[in-house]
Image (cartoon, rainbow, N blue to C red; front, side, top):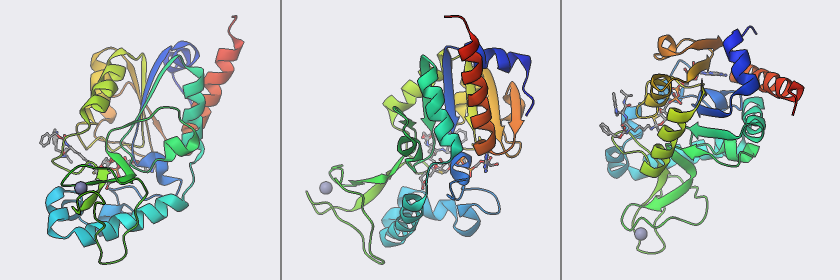
Length: 251
Ligand code: BJW
Ligand code: ZN
């Protein structure tokens, strides 16, 4: 992989790095992305499954979809990209990992702190009283789990279209994007806002923005540098580079 001299210098010396990950970072763990021919939405329509009206119309169908995905995710393992990001977190003084993914794989890889913009599929909460369920819920086919406190419907703690992102998490993600020197967007299509605004904001504030993806995206032309290939190959290479060059520095 060839990288620019600017990126090389930043890998060696940047003290503030922010990373945004999307579904592509988990693709090599066997978790389907959303868009594209192999994506979840090649078979299921997002507007039918990823909004609250769809849930209220047919909660059992939505639970069936999420129970299927939870099962796949539960069996999956973090891949070299998740592990390399944990390595970066340990190496960089001000490191922020922001994810659009709900699969919990960054935490399972050992990330200390993850800003989850779209929630976490392992959690569920009550649509009536907002109480969180204490366990990971798998629904039986045709059934809808209910709240122990009030009997209301439980839903997955994920952000659907038309819903606002968790505001404190989002604020923290924007602040990290605004102050970082180096920003990576990894395996994200750049189609879904508000998350897609983070690399743009980072660039506006002077960060060097690097896209890592198997193919060009909506945001490619707004990035400072593009590295095309699999996240599971590129991120570990960048981490190796980073840790080697930081070792060489006099203390
Ligand atoms: C690899 C790889 C490998 C593959 N290595 N790479 C401004 C402008 C326009 C619209 C809006 C706007 N602001 C808000 C909106 C509306 C809407 C929106 O963005 N719509 C657009 C689609 C047009 N946004 C919202 O509604 C958001 N809410 C919000 O902003 O609230 C305020 C508001 C509300 C209403 C109006 C205005 C403002 C909420 C968005 C919630 C998204 N939820 C989902 C589902 C989560 C739950 C679940 O998992 O079931 O989140 S949708 C889905 O898309 C999921 C993902 O997190 C998200 C992003 O997908 P991602 O991660 O980019 O995946 P893919 O599949 O799209 O791409 C994978 C990429 O990886 C590809 O590029 C591959 O090439 C690459 N890749 N293998 C490296 N090995
Ligand atoms: Zn309740």
